[in-house]
Amino acid sequence: MKKGISLVALIITIIVLIILTAAVVITGVNTPKNAQLAVFLNNISTVQEAVNIKMLNNMTKYATTEGDLEKYKWVGVIQGYTETNAENNDALPESVLQIAGKDVLSIDESIKDNLSINETEVSKYYVTTLGKVYYQGFEYEGNIYYDKDTIGIGTPSAEENESGNIALGSLVPVITPESKKIMVSVNSVRYKYSKDGGLTWEPEEGTTNPNYTFENLEPETEYSIKVMAIDSLDNTTESIVCLTTTLEDTELIDGTYNAYKGVNSPKLDSGMIAVYWDTNGNEIAQYNDGVLNPNFVYNDWYDYTGSTALFATDYTLSKWANAKTPDGSYWVWIPRYAYSITSGYHDQTRESNNSGKIDIEFMKGLEDESKTGRILFQNALGQGNWNIHPAFSYNDGTEKKLAGIWVAKYEMSNNGSNVPQSKPGIESWRSITVADCFTRSKDMYTQYNSHLIRNSEWGAVAYLAHSKYGRHGVQVGINSLNYITGASVTQSTTGNKYGVFDMNGGAWEYVAAGLGIIVSSKFGSENAKYYEVYEAYGDRYGDAVYETSSGIGSPYTNSWHGDCSYFGTSNDSFFLRGGSNNDGSGAGLFYFSRGGGGANGNGSFRSVLWGAL
Image 1 (spheres, rainbow, N blue to C red):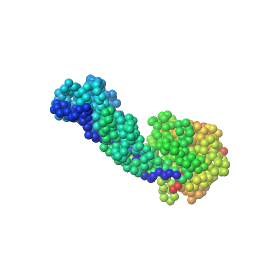
Image 2: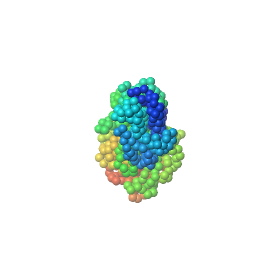
Image 3: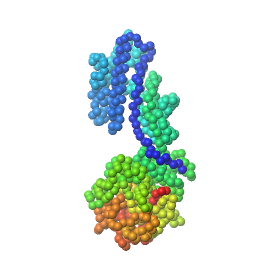
Image 4: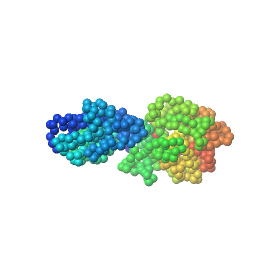
């Protein structure tokens, strides 16, 4: 299986300003010898160059500004068009007159004031919305010249260089390197592109398309991107080398941080394959019968997209990464993240849907830094605290970090040989003791460190689901279909096929956590990294228990969304999560209850993979 390189992917968008020599184009005759014509040619070239430079400076100044850069480039170029106009996305001013049949606008006084051309003369220069400078009319030997490109042709109706010098004089490519591709965007008439600094050009005949993609590139290789602009008279101008970069592989599958996606890459161990679904719902697998699928697009595999607002309905855009193990079981990647509960914490005021708000920032690899640059974390109970979620660590004598976890996509079912599996449309495995849930999960895939889901890991899924990267506060639908797994996308943590299913209803689920020493005696001290022992309600964060409930007393529906809130006792020590289809409105992501660990017809379980450690 192809492995991604273990480097942070260089995924950037750069606006590169290409400063070119403004060449004087003279067609039809030799260079004019008449002094007046030479002065005109010099003056119009000077004005054109001043316009070009101002536009170029604007591109630099406003390159990172949110808004239409095409509007900002006119600030201080067209008379009366200000930064405020650009911020408001105002249209350019109306044309003040026509020259040679072209609509033109007044050039800003700030440009004219810096030119060594007398005031009367400079007032006769105007600019088109293509950035080309025109003169009101210079008469010489019976011909009238309006721009420097028609000198020698002698008629205003002759073919002109309609690209304008701005197209040749300041190419502004937007270059986006990503996985084995470089995409270049510019704005002119016809182009050729080079990835080797101008030694070779493509396409050979040129193209009118201002967007071009270099494909099948090598990772960790330097490329020097150049652009050749070709105007309507076949004059060519090349940019300087505008980008030299190392294109790194973004097809990461080893848990390292993917800067392009903004999350830790899914960790695919040997035998695991990535899957996603096309717009028709057809599954696209990374490998088919061991053969790499040429139609698999890594960029389409996952995208942890945030919805626009709390309770917004666009949460279905988020695509959590999915994978399959050799038995055909489905798993969902939960990348390492930090969280902050900003409303509805414990007994604080809740949002309108009887829940709170959770902010999420994904972490960079195993570093204690989020993708936003946050490095200070409280890692403690409290509203507004920023905590690195505890699900992404374990302790085997020393604390170890995890880049993410693979959570079973569905409640576990029995494959017929008493081996658990995670597949849709199958009755979940019930009437099984918590000890058997723990053992069956652990034996399922020892090479992947499979285990019964811990309470903190349930909390990690619940918090991500409740955040903008999941349902953004919208409650996950209940699975009331008689314990059949994956019944509907309304029961998914993302509201689409990419989420985790059956976390509300179906069967309630045992997790590897409970109150007191009975937990370790049941699961074994040698397996301590795979379970969690509680001392009391409110003794930890991240598990969707204390933080998302106001208490554990009557009426025992004190969790967010009115979910059940029973805490363990000495007799009923083990946590139950999610609720069953019989629990109705009391079931949900934030449901927690208690049980003695015995088999129950309403109880099932879910497994988790850490991958090879």
